[in-house]
Image 1 (cartoon, one colour):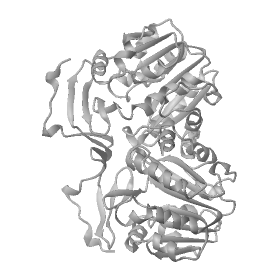
Image 2 (image 1 turned 60 degrees about the vertical axis):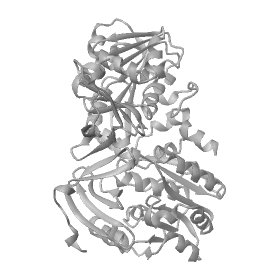
Image 3 (image 1 turned 180 degrees about the vertical axis):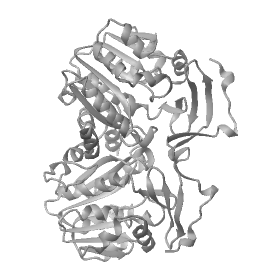
Image 4 (image 1 turned 45 degrees about the vertical axis):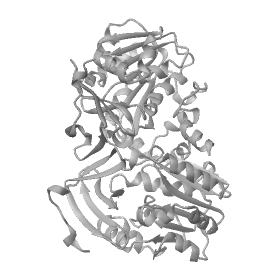
Length: 284
Length: 284
């Protein structure tokens, strides 16, 4: 870890992320812990008084110690609970390990973590307490590869695939196209499930509507669901649940103990589609 | 309307609201439309490219043209739908008229709007298109008074009371104490319902937990529910539904047409309590 990259000082006092051209979030940096450009993106970790350590990739908040549970629990558990016995799980992206720790709460046989950027994993091992113990778990197999390329080459089939991508800029761009979603479809078993983050239901309405339109051509069940994520644009995030055979609302198993946001009630509630989104989806 | 208060210019380019000492929202001002100190608070209206006109009271975002529907629909409809025939409705606060327009979608007999600050109403009539038509409705009776004092003096009983307060600073401070909530209890009919905004379930957890504790001593049914509000702290907001006889989940009537966020499915979903909040409430 190159700690010479620590650059504290007055000009570092505040991080800003624009959510639109005219709005966004600001976060005071009590301490800059890491900053470096990897082969793929700019990586920064700083300490914020309220949110704890925050990981920034290419200027966008990825995760924070204090609010990561909303996002990671809601990316992982709706899919894992809905599958009758998830044994083989693939995570694409998610090099910070937040989704991985949630998957490891289940008696899965193996988890493939496919992250494009080795430095994200190295940095997260240093700054986020959950990653190192997860990587020591013998069920975990870590690959450094582009998710789309991995899907093209692998002959493995998975019960559940989780797309823990960043936004469709930089190295995550390839994880948002039709080609990628076709790849996902071909690497799940017949009753397999894909869950992916798709953006803000307020800020990214057009791109979510476009995804709905594309995904409906590929999967029988395309169900959007929602969760609060305080540090993400608009504070409410949208995910999609994809399957050829499994309806998300049929989930009947009890979740692992110790969760903070996810519960069976929250699972069912999360899929309620507000009328304005129903109308947007209906148009396409 | 004193338009000499318009102060555009470079230093007006950005509005910032701190949600904690170390985090918050920023909103670019494409045009400052109004700014004046009333007898009660500082009032500002500016134009933002994404959110349209935004009303700020004492430095806190109250409402915006583009995202007001989340908040106002979710303050009003869960209570109005849950009451079998709401005829007499009281709104405390809400001088911007957003809640009023939602109440007027029902065949109510009268709506009392009790706002402490006449200038909020005057400003909102100028800048928000929904207020003036609502005030022309013969069912509406507008009072300029402190909500707590109004409750002490009135001998009227209401089917539904909606507390559309700002945060517990400045003139809204009196709308957050036990004394005020006892006043609410005494001015509703036996199967009456109160709905109130109570803050962010992430940023204001301690004050919500304290309210839960106080309110459970006063009302049989104390049910918290949630909705996204992009311009509010954390982007997800918490409301409370209070009644001596009515369970919110028993709502069976169809809502008015034309709503954007509220639906029967959204109504039921909104009451799902995440485990971390259940634990906070259980402790008290």
